[in-house]
Length: 220
Ligand code: BG6
Ligand code: MG
Image (cartoon, rainbow, N blue to C red; front, side, top):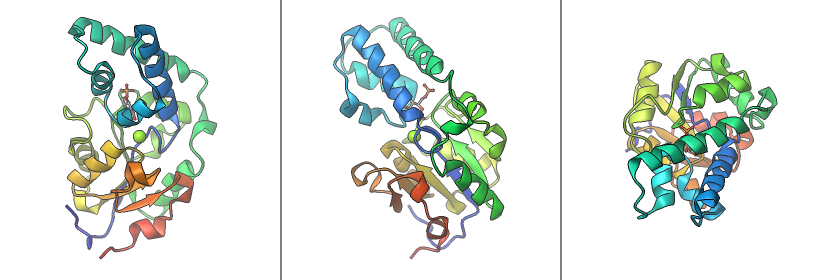
C-alpha cells in the first residue's frame, strides 16, 4: 500500500534500535534467559526477535517446546528484570548518534513526532534518555492488542497525533516494524542492513545517515 503523493506531516519513530541501542540489551536479556533454560539461542536467532513483542519473542525462542503458560509468564518476567536492570546506567548520552537531533529537526520543520514502540518499557527508556517530552505522542507495547507486524501500533500512534496514516513516515530498524508500517499504508524508512529492512521505501545504515529532505521528498 502506498500513498506517494501525500505530503508528510508526521514522523513515527521506533524506539529500540532507532532512538537508542536497547536492541542489544533486549538481546542480552533473552540470551541470558535461554542460557539458563538450556535452550540454544544466539545473535543470529535473535534477528527474528528484533521489534517483536515480549510474548512473541519468547514463543520464538521456545519453538515447539511444551512450556506451560505460568512458566512462560515467569520467564518473561525474568527476562524483563534483566532488561530493566540493564537500563540502570542509561542516561541522555545513550541516544544513538543523530537521533535526538533528528527528532528536534523534524519538530523544527513543523512535523509532528511520535513513538511507535512494541516495548512496554518505552516510557522508562525515554525518561532515562531525557526524551519523554520530545514527542507529541507515545504508542507503546501496552497501547494495542496486535503487535508489529500488524499495522495497529503505528495507526494508534498516528491517531494520537491526529495525523492520517498516509501522511506519516515511519523510521524502523526491524523487519517486523517495516512490515507494520507498510501494512499501515505509511512511508517506511529502514534503519539497518538491506537484508533486514531493504523492503522499506528508503533505507539508511544508521540513524545518523538519515537525510530528512530525501525522506520527505514526494515520491513517484
Ligand atoms: C521492541 C524490541 O521494541 O520491544 C524487542 O525491539 C522487544 O526486542 C519488544 O522484545 C518488547 O519489549 P518489552 O520491553 O515490552 O519487553
Ligand atoms: Mg526497533
